[in-house]
Image 1 (spheres, rainbow, N blue to C red):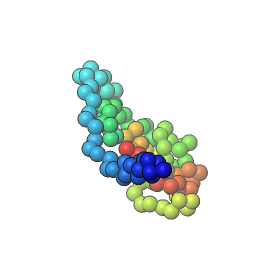
Image 2 (cartoon, rainbow, N blue to C red):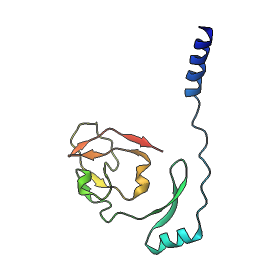
Image 3 (tube, helix red, strand yellow):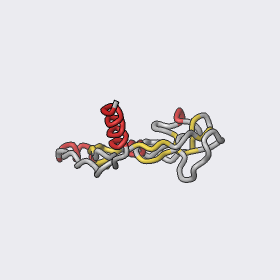
Image 4 (cartoon, rainbow, N blue to C red):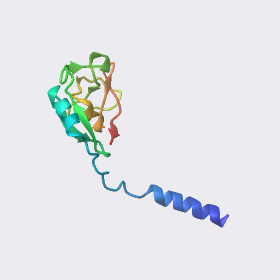
Amino acid sequence: MRNVVMAAVLMFAAGCSGMGSPLPAVKATPLDQQACQQQGGRWQAIGRAQHWVCLVDYADAGKACSDAAQCQGRCLLEDAEVPAGQPARGVCQRDASQAFGCRQPVQNGVAGSVVCID
């Protein structure tokens, strides 16, 4: 019984530890970066893992929307937080980097819950 309690305490304590520092960025080749820039993209490390990706703006970036079906990416609230379940209008996301951070989606003209991803 004592071992079970000790194991539970250790598991609980491990869950309380901090996230630590970001992982080091993965090296990308100059050819990858050059190909990205040739298609109008920005070469950038994104997310906590700092993976290098080519970010190309969606053609409809910044367009007003009320659902992701109206966008190449997602429909997101731009600045103000709206209570989930309330009517809302958003804008089409700029690029894939907006998958990271805290974002509030709009679906069927209704604000969703804030989702934080890193």
